[in-house]
Length: 74
Image 1 (spheres, rainbow, N blue to C red):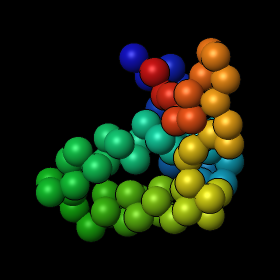
Image 2 (image 1 turned 90 degrees about the vertical axis):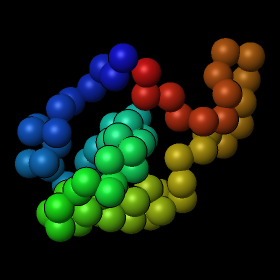
Image 3 (image 1 turned 180 degrees about the vertical axis):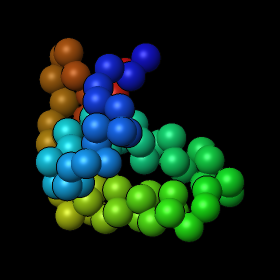
C-alpha cells in the first residue's frame, strides 16, 4: 500500500519537490491507465517521466542486505 501524499497535494507542488517514491508510484499508476487518460493526464504523466529522467532514473546507487536497487513505494 502506498504511504505518501495524494495527487491533490502533489498537484500544487513542483515535480522537483516530489519524493522518489511518489514519482515511482504515480508513474506506475499512470502507466497502467495510459490508454484512458485525457490530454491533461497525459501531460502530467509526461512531466513525471521528465522529472524521473532529470534525476537520472529511479535506481538506487547500490544495494545492501536490507535494500535492493529499485525505489520501493510500498
